[in-house]
Length: 548
Ligand code: GLN
Image (cartoon, rainbow, N blue to C red):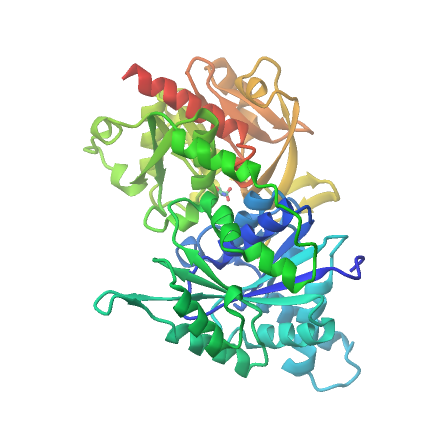
């Protein structure tokens, strides 16, 4: 920790899960930035997985990948989108990671014969993580996953209690996010669950400094005073967090309720500073004034769990902001497009562009390939991301190169592995090696890699530069043996890894917009800085909608 006066804000949640703590943390980060402070946001996850990389998207939603190659919680995506600060491996800490470090230290004998206990060894390890890898930021916001009272989160709560005590009020602030349920028959907002959750926190030695109360209706002043009285707070630190129709309205709404003001007051900072919220007002204005609608069809297999596509949804919306249109997403379960009778014409009747996003495993693959075929021959804008790009290669190989058995070795042994397991590749640090038996956790090509774009290609004109850097998360790669066959038949690989071995981008020049990328561009898109591929794809889809 280089900056000795860095201020920590610990964000906990009470009453129920899914209160939007991640968004609340991201919004507070953005508000502090708007006051001219630098911020870092961290997530402490109480589960036993070392990282969410091996978890099913149905369990955990999207796995957000950082530049430095960590597979992290999707809240880090919110943090990055709202603050523009790139998240790092050290910004997501899990119980699994802590325990595995403590246990390997114990095996090495580093504890010199001590009995290893939750307090102090595990709590010390948590505190060290919280305090490590901080540069000169003014604020570090640490969100604790889960809900206060969960058995799993106890060591984290204890660790932040100790830290709060060590650092003192001038360097630590506790923000508790709770729910005020509205009981229709009584016509009232209820404060009791919040009182209980604060009591629970107090029982663990933490007095929250600020309460952020999620609610579907305005909190009357008397209710605020009541909460303040029972929770040992001043009523101005009981902040209303009303449901809003767009996540981009949240920072302004919280500012209006005084959230950033109360945080600055807690730390005795200059209260005369007026936060510069221009960019947030601008986004909201664009959103409200957007003209026209573009319908994007997303063909995937996790369509019943759209948190699995969190960054994708946001990047699509950013593409809408860039074109001043509203984008509606139609979720299409790829398994429904598998059989011969699937009537693709009617499924895609009102669709102006198709996205086949990232994915794993064979289920639903034929439906994705059918959708890609439909987009290619009907000249509907198509955007294939990672798995979607790999399936576009297979579709083209089967239907244009006439390699009927073209497949990916992800689905088992095949004579024509157009997409194959990558066993060796170059990183900034040297060569990475894998084999078929390698662990599943953390062993993909992960994080940012450079890619060189071909002159006169569509992607070059979209990015307007030659070398780009994008984030990866995959185990398989397009087989470069077939590159010239594809080119002869009208599909170009217009982006290659800088050592020219790995195909990174494909495009079909005789199609209005047919692009596949091996990386995940959605991870880098921001509302203030929409990703160029998404802006361009939505623009092509908008043009397509005008043809109808
Ligand atoms: N399953 C594919 C692979 O591992 C694609 C992964 C993805 O879409 N992120 O290569």
